[in-house]
Length: 180
Image (cartoon, rainbow, N blue to C red; front, top):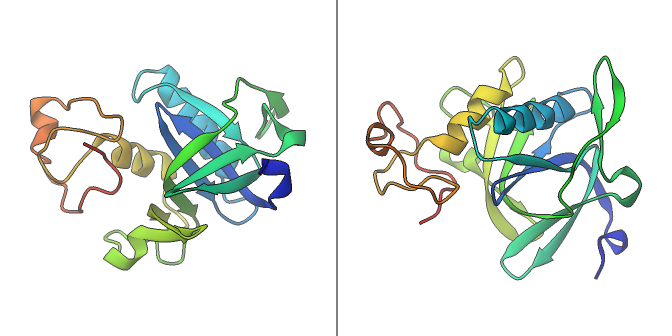
């Protein structure tokens, strides 16, 4: 079934390497800004390249044990940048959601409870990153993308970590979505 046959949700989404990131939150919480900041971080080489999937409205489709995100047709390739308005940008037609970021989350704490670190979307349990109001989301999301608590040596992008990052120094939270 095409995305047009599924209701859209108020969210933005990007794909970092092969990791789809769904960004949710109330209006004005910074979804578009975080999406653009992640794109810039990818261009700066801090993380694998990042492309917009959709801004403001996206469609979610279940595909087996995966959730696929696609842009709303009318908004494909468009992103709102505060101070500039609606701008055209390169985009990916879809992504496999592997992380959900909730902005202005009431359960976004310095040390979130384990129950806050997952969410059910379309019947699939996915890793969740709750970011509380007042927190800057970019460093938190970057940390989730590039750090691990265990030492098997693979990050979310399936690339080996450097020796110091394999140790998980200072990271006491279980890995959220990294794969082997």
